[in-house]
Image (tube, rainbow, N blue to C red):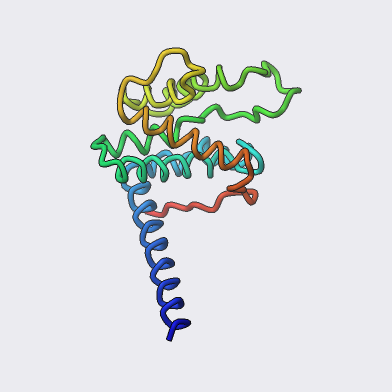
Length: 182
């Protein structure tokens, strides 16, 4: 009888994870299909963020974690702006590990939020909250702190995801496989 109960618990955990993933993909499609389908965002699959994690997957993980944090803590926020800002927070569009790259910035952590904001602003009509999320997500390296709760949530989610990736507790496996069809 105990084996059967353990089996049922495992099945229930898998169902719950599956439902959470379905909800994430629904939210991503509803709020950011234009970003996910863009050629430039797709190109982030080719750049590594931390460890072996592609920037593309890192940004999706940060969006997922941001949603989880806001729900867990009961923080009301603009979910659309939270998701879009999280997806675009590392929209710098280059390999920051490549020391031979023209205009290589050894201080990537300090400079990439401004570069990401510039790139995202060229492609998308960003709200003030989305701009705050992108520009301030590296606080305290970006001396001025975030001004909205969405930016604080993404900043926290980014630190958490980056820590897991750096400690190799969450590993990338090459190219991410998130597809949004619509």
